[in-house]
Image (cartoon, rainbow, N blue to C red):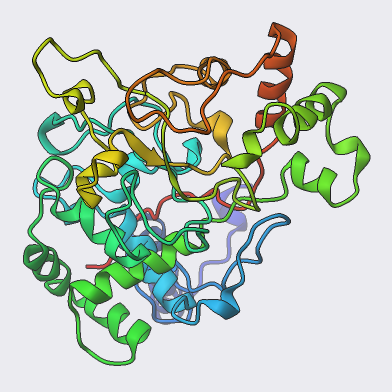
Length: 377
């Protein structure tokens, strides 16, 4: 085609057409180079709200003791708020630690280390206990030594602990209250503008109450599914509820009686002339009750998701489940306050393997959680 065959429009028609073409090109380039700063959803919500949407309370998985009708203080609005608070490192003195730093979803809301780490790399002397199904305890006290009388009271402890998050509670309140997004979320959750440490703790507790474990192979077997357990796991189950007597302390839907026992874990023979209690670097329950008979006693933990929580015991001193079973098999470590329930159990190596196989069958579902990607501003 040559220019002789082109029909050239008059100038009066050319400029409007060219102008529209240029504007269309520029508009398209602008759309490609400058996407909107926030998602266009029509809801008017901030990105941090979209990242942590309001959800109904979870359906309890098979085998979980949860019944939210018995916990009216657990509401979707409080759970949503508590999820932010649980994962927010701004609640620690140096902005590096949160509740989720030690209570990790991938490890059954416990941790893979023997001792918890706090701000500036400080090391505690206990391992973080799991919080699974924590709102439905048999014996209603919390922590390894039972020093907290409610789940909300427990939630305050790590915030102010100088080794863990090291934030004075009034500083926690000030940090949260300084953010309009949090203030709005508290008003939605509680119905008014009051924001204090008790409400922060209640929101944390509400979130923790939804971390539910259930529908494990053991639960499905109990519900009538004969194929849910392998032959080795079934033999381990028979030992657990039979000759090994594990269910004397690990009982009920949470596989714990929530009480306190001295198994001798952490015992070292005291030096001559030293008081016997010095044999325990951590006196456990006796720190709370001031009763020497509670020396070296610690709370029975749930066995749900237990295979995810190595190392074991309050001090993380036992590396594997097999090591833990072996300690019970030997009847604990002798000391002046050894529990009367601790006695040697005649188990062969194959039976230890079968018990371990059953314990692995207590891993279920319902608790897994990804942390929020953004937080209230």
